[in-house]
Length: 402
Ligand SMILES: *Cc1c(COP(=O)(O)O)cnc(C)c1O
Image 1 (cartoon, rainbow, N blue to C red):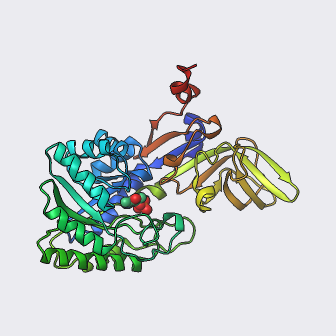
Image 2: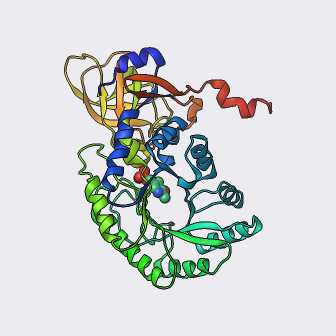
Image 3: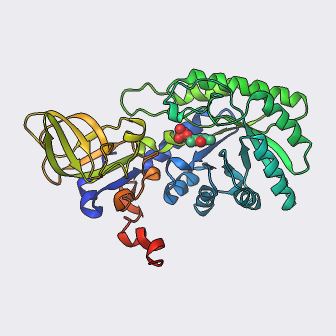
């Protein structure tokens, strides 16, 4: 589908996040269909893009939700995701969050330490409930991605070692207030190599088998998320090969396969539209200053992430390299570096591609900039799914204290 960016600019202004909802649905069904031979649940990792309309749209396709805070659980419930499809993960859940998750009767809590398991047991006992839990195993495999988004090595804070996991399952099995229904791993994000995922699945499936032998019956085999997308020229993991590897690793185990996909469902369906403000030259360095900035899209400066930028319109003239930067008072405020562009003029439109995941959700109000509006496009029609933030939105919690 081609998107009429200049019509969107006229209607909604910039900076503007635009999501192609048809693409999101297609991404979801590609993965769901890949798992057609198994019982499966695709649990959308809400942190990738937590707009209520995005969650609701995926929910309508059949997705569940993987949440890492009670706020995300509330977003999932508000968007109509059924509680029995909601998973609550994360290394630092508070008692109040655990209690609320138990009250809401979500599918399971993914636990990341023995200490957390004991807290969950206590909270469940107080509420006289049995907590459905899953334990995140750290399989100690190298996902070979950016160190900030690698999570499956013992040096990372995530999950527990296999021996510890086993002890925790035995404890949980004997507890009146814990029901160990799941097993979980998640080794990192933006993975482009299937081998570490297959290896982790094998390790965790072996553990699942040995648990079965001692009477712990796992129903949900949760392989996390982390499937990479093509930002530039990366080779990406084929969904069918992915499903096959997991299916093979879990052969003979009667489990529902759960995937917590974030980026791979929404990443390539998002665009950040901005307007050119000025051009300038410092020494021999050329800068194109646009009205979107690091507060709108943090990934370039945080991870040195590459996002393709595209100048719209018919600019002619000599092409030279430029850095695309925003108005924020930080040298790290850039969206792209060394992009070959012809001369730009005021109000030319610039599109940053593949920003549907970890784009808006990492946006901030730094420099008292209002966060961008968000627009969805479905079957050729656009609609706002989040208003542009205005000054009053930003000072609401402060102004009353003056
Ligand atoms: C972030 C996260 C995901 C989703 O990761 P993607 O790379 O966006 O697919 C899944 N599970 C857990 C536990 C996570 O923290």
